[in-house]
Structures are given as structure tokens and as C-alpha cells.
Image 1 (tube, rainbow, N blue to C red):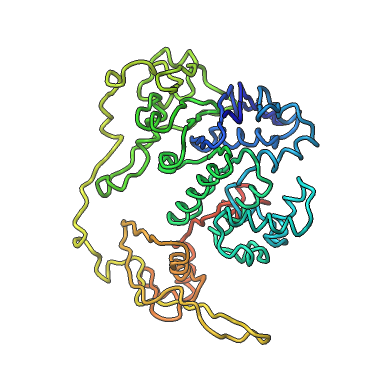
Image 2 (cartoon, helix red, strand yellow):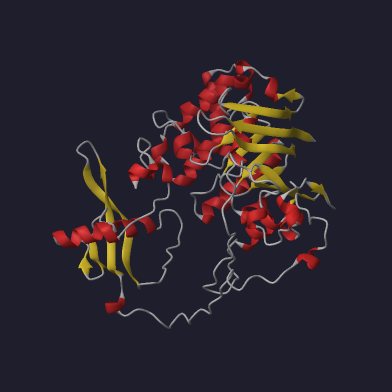
Length: 467
């Protein structure tokens, strides 16, 4: 049964200075009840703006103008006034945002937030709202839901926060759920559990789900259909198996080629899409992907290709979409992909004097305090007897579930934690006891890219000032 119809959606931003930016251009798609539609594409391709349009969260005129039709069941959403949107958000359409830490109020308990979401749309008693909150947490596969009602967001792990955000979104039993990169910051084990839970929610509640993601592996496992977006337009759509198994748009083919595979030869460089996405304020004539496309012809630079229907409900926006693919395959340029045979695992291990960074029998214990006097009653052994070396010019991957000690280990190299035992050295410097000149060198030569860029960058400073 069809749930959502989007027809010829366009979103244009009108900055106070400079030309207008057409962020979403002539986008049309539909979502059925119980179906998962994946929307994929590079950052800036229009995925999130499209999702925000379905919730009426794009800026108001004159800063932004929206055209087209958005129909949920029999309701035209674009005709709603502010009161109608408030009644629709949460009750009919809900969204799970990328960062649960920002989506959850740090001053309110999880239970209070979910109960408020229920009571905002339904006239129920406090006891009934509490029961619905427990039910939502249970549907979100949260352990000990009764206990979680009394906890704050900072008391939960990353996976638990994401489950709480999903429970908050589904508490009022919406017909359509939009999930914007819901598993970006989670390890693969928690990611699999969250995605399986979203799939079961669609089945149990007959709910439609729009899954916005960069991860084509997630798309292949979870989505029924997929839309590929580029420069604000849908450039390929259809059943997941058809789009990923027989891509007809060069951009989709490039995304698949850039996806890492565990069965690829070791130390093989990924094939990347050369160039940059177009400036949406100054769209080039013709196909927006033409400057980056390996199949580009003169016709591509003059004509914007329409979404051409193909077999099996498949469609692609390419002048060559209907041409047999074996006629279009060209040998890749020799410089695009470089494959280097991996050395045996036992060969090339750095000697102690070759190591750039070195951990030797490192331990890190966090004290646990309890009682009225906050005395240390036990310890959390975050890192135990870890020894490893990082050689110059080599990459060392630390892999493990959340809480396995990966971040705690690197914090000791950054001098953000002091090891309980063992030694940490960087290029001959004892990281725990550096001299003043060595400390300045450490601060200059050891840098970190944190997981959450929003928390890493000062919102009161420009990028230039930060750099």
C-alpha cells in the first residue's frame, strides 16, 4: 500500500548575498507501507534537505522556497499551516537524526522526553504515557527499559543513546520514519542490531522508512529500494538488487567501485571519483556529473539527462542508460587504481628502534567512587597489558566493539590520560614524563581527528580562525 508520494520536489535557498542555491531539483519518489527506501549519495547531494522538506523543517520564505507536492496517505503536507505541521511531526512523520547526543535533551531524563512526545499528540494520563514510553524503549530493543526511563543521555552508551532517540521518534507511532545516518558513530556489532531493529519496526508497525546513508553495505542488506542522488537530483532508482547489481549510471558505478571490500587484495588502493561535486549556485550546463564522468561526450555537456525508465522498475538519468553495458566498458586509466601486493604478515615488523609510537605492557584503570564520601570502591580496567608499535609510513588499525579500550589507548598517547602501568613512547620521547621541549614537540607532531566534528569545532569561530 502506497504511503508517501513526492512529486517534482524542489528546494532553493536564497542567501542574502550571492546567487540562489538549488539544493533539491525535480525529485520524485514514493514509499510504501512496511518498505525501506534508501537514499544514498555524497555529502551535499540533497539527501538531508529532501528529508527536512518532508517534515516542513526547511527555512521559511524569503530565505528558502519549496515547490512540488508531498502527499502522505491522503494529506498534502505542503498545504499545512504551522499548527498542522506540529500535529503531523511525530504523530505521522518522525525523524531519527544523525547525532543522538544532539537530538536528546541533556537536562531531561529519557522517560520525560518520550512521555512528553506521547502527550504532545495524544490525550493520555501520565501513567499511560509512561507505559507507552516503556513500550517504545522495548520496541527499540533497549535493555532494562524501566531503568532507562530515569537515566539521562550522558549515562547511556552510544548504542543506547541511538536506541533512545529511535524510541523517542516512534513513541507516537508515526506512519513514516526518516533515519538520517542512524549508525554512523556505532561499531559494526551495534550497527547491525540497530538496523535489524529498524527492519523489524517496519514489519511490526507497517511503517515506511526512509534510510539516508553513505554505506552501500547497509543499503544492500536492509533496503527494498534505493534512490541515488547527485547535485540535488535523483540519478538512479529502483529495487536494491537491480541498482547495485546492474548500475546504469556512471556515478552509481563509481560509488560501488569506491566501496571497500574485505575480500579485496591487501593494501589495494580504492578507486576514487576524481574531481568535486558541482557548485549548486553555479550549475554547469548539461549533466552535472559530466566533469567527473569517464564516459562523457560532447552531448553530455549540453543536455541534462532525464530519469529514463528501464526494465524491472529500474531508472537512470544518463544518455547511455539504455545502451548495453558491455559496449560501454572501457579499460580504467593506469593511474586510477594502484594495486600493491601485500607483504607476508610476519615480514617487515618494525624493530624497537624503528617504532614511531610504542606501547609497552600498558594498563589504564579508571576508579569507581561510591558512597557519601565518594571513596574509591573498585576500578574499571579499560586497558590491560597492551603492547604494540607503529612504524613510520605504516597504518595500524585498532578494531573492536564500543568499550573495548581503543579510545582509552590513544588518549594515553595524546597525554589526555596517564597510564596506570607500562610505558608509552613517541619517537624516543617518554610521553608520561616529557621535558618542556619534548612536550612542545609532542603537541605539534601528535594530532587527532575526533569522532564528532560538531563537538570538535568551535561554533563561534570561522573555519579560518580555527585553522
